[in-house]
Image (tube, rainbow over all chains, first blue to last red):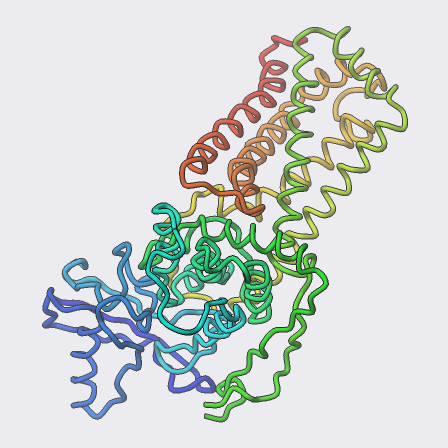
Amino acid sequence: MKLTLTIWRQKDPGAKGKFVRYPMDNVNPEMSMLECLDVLNESLAERGEEPVAFEHDCREGICGSCGFMISGVAHGPLPATTVCQLTMRHFKDGEELVLEPWRSRSFPFVKDLVVDRRAFDRIIQAGGYVSVSTGNAPDGNAIPVGKEEADRAMDAAACIGCGACVAACPNGSAALFTGAKIAHLGILPQGQPERDRRAVRMVAQMHAEGFGSCTNIGECTGVCPKEIPLEVIARMNHDYLYGAWRERRQVVTTIAPATDWEFGKK
Amino acid sequence: MSTAVASPRENRAPGFWGSTNGRKAVMAVTGFILFLFVIGHLLGNLQVFDGPVRLNAYGRFLHNLGELLWIVRGILILCVVLHIWATFVLWRRNRDARPIGYQVKKSVASSYADRTMYWSGPIVLAFVIFHLLEFTSGTIHPESRFIPGDVYHNVVAGFSVWWVSAWYIFALILLGMHLRHGLWSMFQSLGLNHPRHTPVLKQAALWIAILITAGYISIPVSVLAGWVR
């Protein structure tokens, strides 16, 4: 099949970026979007041009490395799919696709389709530890967990941190990500001792990173490759509101959101 | 790749009033109080169908409340101010969160009402100001004389002007859209979401918004049609 890829090309954060059109004549419909870019990059390398930079790792939709906008939708038009799992047969022959990186102040631009998502790591880091007894591996059923709780925690824990929620949100909010991280520990009995503190700190870090606010419209859930439900955001709000009151005497500090790219030294 | 670089941004954590979540909670609570007013105001207004005696008596009753009326008005004004403050600071933050926009951007999950809250809100505010000037203070009362105390006359005379009614109907449809999102969104902002109840709540929000809009619009429509004279 034939496709035209219009890709955002930008050498580095300081350079001026532009869209470049790449017509592709021989696209195998069974290829994934990333394999399609691999094929394009091969031909670019043969011509002596700079290949298109994009992030990837497992290519089976579970690592959260890959992701970019395809014609205005994060991870492309197929629901519950990362770009590595999106096969080209879902596009029409002759279609023109516009590939853009995630756009967010909190995800500093790196190159072409790559952005720096370490803001997410710092939110997780801010959450701190979970109390577990050291020593031998605990008995598997020592702490009873209800089936429904286990399922809801697992739904939240399915988050792979790809950043599509931020990219799709018109407000650039990281509420779905932070909500998923707060919910998946907050639902389980093991997460109860630090529940208040964790919510307050992760929300504080989310704020410090400069993410926008949630308006509950659900664009994030719509593009989430793991279909994290909007419920986790309510969970975050709930835990934050209670936690902010109960932890009101605690001094909460955040981790400085500094990246090398911001300061121009690589 | 070290992250140990001095940051130009401050690393003091925001408190309740500074955090996005806290501000959304403020928006939800104030929105709920304003929703209660919208219901009460509708029930009061529908007495127009009971004739001039009943409506004017209701108007006198409200004015005779004295200090209590001003307490309620004060709470409502405070809610409006806080609601707008929370919206404004969050809107500014959200605008800054994406300095470079997308070339192509599609919406996949949100409704039209969800996406137009930033528009329906200010237009409804403009309408409320106009509405107060027309029916409470009587400063603007086109094509007829405003008679303080004769609520029924003021309503009929006011809505007999076609563009006043048109503007009223337009603003009320926008209020309905605002409520369609806000009525379930406030629960989400306050941390109440349930896999079974929230879909019901969303449907309920839609129908309550339709009923409220229909209830309010029935008044200018009845005046224009000549049913209420």
